[in-house]
Amino acid sequence: MTVHFPFNNTYARLPDRFYARVAPTPVSGPKLIRLNRELAVQLGLDPDRLASPEGVEFLCGRRVPEEAEPIAMAYAGHQFGHFVPQLGDGRAILLGEVVDRDGVRRDIQLKGSGPTPFSRRGDGRAALGPVLREYLVSEAMAALGIPTTRALAAVLTGDVVAREMPLPGAVLTRVASSHVRVGTFQFFAARQDVEGLRLLADYVIGRHYPQAAGSDRPYRAFLDLVIAAQADLVARWLHVGFIHGVMNTDNMSVAGETIDYGPCAFMDAYDPATVFSSIDQQGRYAYGNQPRIALWNLTRLAEALLPLLSDDEEKAVAEANEALGAFPRDFETAYHAGLRRKIGLATEREEDPALAGDLLKAMAENGADFTLTFRRLSDAAAGPEGDEAVRNLFINPLAYDAWAARWRERLAQEPQDGASRRAAMRAVNPAFIPRNHKVEAVIQAGLEHNDFAPFEELLAVVSKPYDDQPSLARYAEPPEPHERVLRTFCGT
Image (cartoon, rainbow, N blue to C red; front, side, top):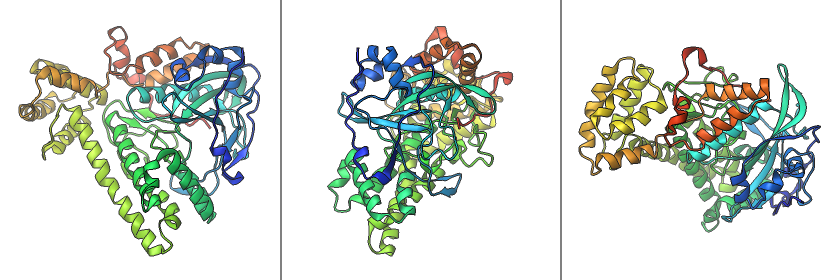
């Protein structure tokens, strides 16, 4: 039984300076933790064959499919504001591309598959914990309807990786619309390689933004489309309380997908200053800073694209600034539209942003859980009998009462009946997110006991985030004080 990967590679056809050709490093004893069978079918792959011993060897890099052209992609990036002219895939290898059942081209990449020329003295490996975290959170984001990379498989390698302590190694097989980043453009801009910039821009336009090709200013149109996609993406993050944790320019995909789940987490009690990442000492990438950082990153993309926007530097800068000027408007539009839906408003009124903002302010002042507040608000929208469950989340329930009185006056101006409004709100306010203490618990079960049943159960829960799942209601609860996990860590 032979595993067939219908690779149809295009990035590997670009010039050699775009990547390094490198094979994965074989591992000693691969063992499948989980295969995403539904995603495999979507990619045109046979899940039964992938789950076979031969398939698992492909999923961890012990063997390379005949059709693969393994490469490590080159890119640069700003890391916490400091520019590094060469980063690249230091522990990831792109096996190739497939065209899925919807006609969408998708990368298949091995993360944690050994050193590459870009490893910078790193071992190129991944520990089990970060692999489980990325699998869980990326699949949760997909279920929440947020553009994201996906997890095809997680495999134990049988090898030990050295971090603060010896840890079991693992490989994540990741699927993405592409792995081109803002930092990929910066790589060529830093080298004043205008031909490389143009080749890359043309490639991304053809793959992700074909509508820009027909414009009389295709590179400006491309920049406009990336800005719009990122504005919408970050607004979606905020709607579910997601904190990426390390929004460096090399971790921002130009395809508009969430990528590189390192020290990511979802917040419990609402606080715009929430930070989980152990390496974000200054709160640069805090929850509430993410829109500002997205614009900062997009400004770096615009700088890289200047030679393509115009031969006249002054005109190019003006073009870039005009394009970047759309981000605040695009973000605010997407963000406030999402907040209106979260509080049950189907129509738009001028005072709505202030109404939603006042709820968030009251939540922050009263330690209210972000996810539970909005989920229970969905039931309160059907009638005042639902208020008690919401107000109990506030340190001072009167703060909710004062806001709810204004909210009900606004709801009275809406055309929907209570049942319809409740259903609409429950469709955008999840009951379940991968809460950080639950993620850490399943990681510890895997690390300490080689027990992946808790991982499977949490994955099943977050794969249906909008369903009540009464028998698993404990996963909806915020952590007790002793359960709180305040720091998350990168996998390197």
